[in-house]
Image 1: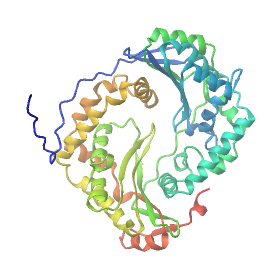
Image 2: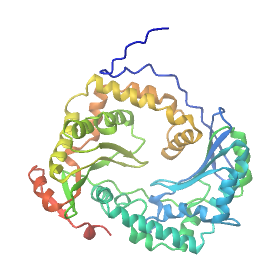
Image 3: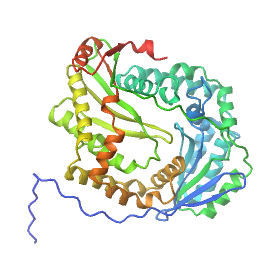
Image 4: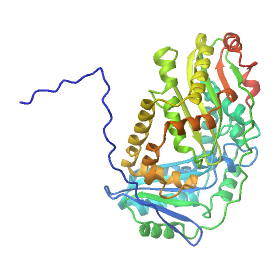
Amino acid sequence: MTAAVPFDRSRRPAPGPLRPYHFPAVQRRTLSNGLQLAVVEARSFPVVTVGLVLPSGALAEPEGKDGVASLTTALLESGAGSRNAAEIALVVDGLGLSMDSWASWDVSEASFTCLRARADEGMAVLADMVLRPTFPDDEVARLRAQRVTSLAQARGEAGGVAGEFAGLYVFGRESRYGRPMGGTAASVSGIGRDDVAAFHAAHYRPAGSTLFAAGDVSLDELAALAERHFGAWSGTPPPHAPPPPSPERAATRIVVADRPGAVQSAIRLSHPAPGRGTPDYFPMIVLNSVVGGNFSSRINMNLRERLGYTYGAHSAFGLRRTSGIFMVSTAVQTEVTAPSVAEILRDLREVREAEVTEAELADARTFLSGSFPLPMQTTDGLAAKLEALIVNGLPDDYFSSYRERVMEVTAADVLAAARAHLWPDRAVVIVAGDGARVGPQLEALGLGTVEVVDPASVLE
């Protein structure tokens, strides 16, 4: 028998070399009605994921109808063609489909995953949902009530209030980005069946839309299915204006959403960020990984491991198609609210002042590059990457060189990205907590006037 090799548990194992991975080639075609097709083939299993992306999400909603895009997608399975909600559910279960529909800021989408042998039947269900939804009155009322309840519940939680405040104070109430993507309880309560039907009639059109598939399917096969089920579809959605530019800010702004008696504070530090197509994307994701994007990041290790202030702190660049937001999120005990804010600001300032260490750079690049292929083991993971190309207008070969471009990021690139895209001294700091206790703490930081407001008076 071979003697066991001692394992030194005091040292973290070094990462091994990256294994080769090649993103499948993207194949495209356009039908005569303007519907675009996109396919990536993956023949390992007889499974396929199909999705339809429509270029109208929350940014396309009519004034005063915030939430109608997401409510419309939620209702697609509530009645379509000749079937009611229960009959659709039975068909979906019988075919073994995994079906989903949702809206984002930029798009509305419906998709399904199934065995290759069920693709034609799955496409028939998808076509009914997208082209022939019935929007029954009782289903509209039921889902609207559910949505209103969930939105009201979110405002009862510190994190929900802090997140809504962050969008409002970063972008302003006049920007659609300044209001929740799914709407508010007040706006959703005012949406009726006619509003949903009107949004669908105007925006669910083939021109500008893309039917995409990933898995055991060819472009010719998808084109045949598309012609059969979507070939008679026609029309062009109306244009919609992008949100106004984010307001410039000259100094840090601190706002406390007062929750008297709260023993914890939810903290959100936010400011605008560029759109997904920014040429700085790769330095930015490496930067975020170092500063707050994973467990070993500076902010988390500082607040959680060194100081013991929180169970976790996280940062992210939320990069939408036109513009995005940078946000640091955490929750801490009331008594350490101001020190936590000060530490977050210090970490953000320091990453703008000097290059990250070689160890930090290597860890971030290796993590991002090594984890990149993992979601692509499934057809829905592949489909998600294909969707990202479509939604954000990225080149078809974008993911073919993704890992290489991550590994090419230098410490100098990260420093340049930090100085261009992190604004700790022009950020909005939102604290949802006990204003009487955290207000004086925050004033003592000397960052400017601390606004303590009643959430009910600010939020609609």
